[in-house]
Length: 103
Length: 144
Image (tube, rainbow over all chains, first blue to last red; front, side, top):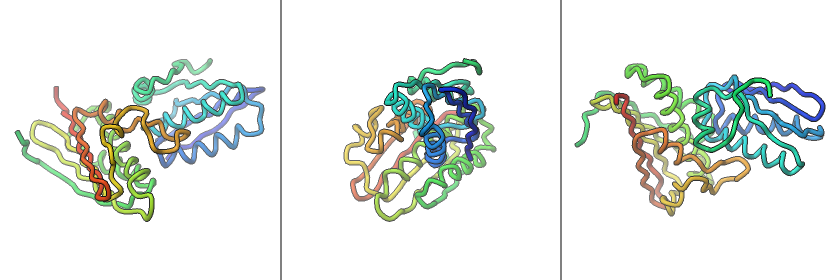
C-alpha cells in the first residue's frame, strides 16, 4: 500500500509519499497528486520519498509524468529525501534529487 | 554447469496489478531461508516487480490470463526467479530491452523495466514467441 499527504503554500505543494510504490499504487498516487495540483496555481511541486519503503520503475514513471505536467505550466518539480533503495532506482534513471528534507 | 535446486516454489496468479505486491510478498517469504542482505532482497523484489508488471501491462491486451512465477534456491546461494505469461509475446526482444523503450503510455511508464532487471540481478534471460507468451529468467548470487 502507498499513500500521500499534502502540505501546501503559496505557489508550491509538497506531496509526502509513503509505503510501496509499484505500478498498481502509482496509478492511485498519480490521480491523487494530479487532482490536488489541478486548479491550484502551483509553480513548484515537491515529491518527498522519505516514507517510501519500496519503489520500482513505476515510481520513475510517476515522477517523469508529473515533471512533464509541471513543465507545461512553466513550473518545476523537485524530488527529495529518497531512502537508499529509492536512490538506487533514481540514479539508474538519472533523476536528480535532494537529500535534505528542507529545500 | 547446472546447479542443483535446493528448494523451489511455483505460484500462478491473475495478471492484475493488485498481484504485484502479492508476488513480492511471496518472494520475500520464500527468501527468509536464504537470509539475504536488505539491499539484496530489495534488488530482487524490484527486479521481480518489473517482470510481473511487464506481464500485467503488456501480455494480455484482451482478457487477462495467468502469470506463472517460479522461485528457486540453487546450490551455491544462487536465487533463480522465473516469470512467464501466455500472452501476446514480444516481437523484438532486443528492442524491448533497450532503456527508455516503451509501448506503454509514456506519461506513466518510464521504459526502464528490463534495464532495472539487468542492473539489479546478475543475469537476465528473455525468451518470447509472438502469440505464445514470454518468459524471463533471472539469477542473483547472494555470495561474492
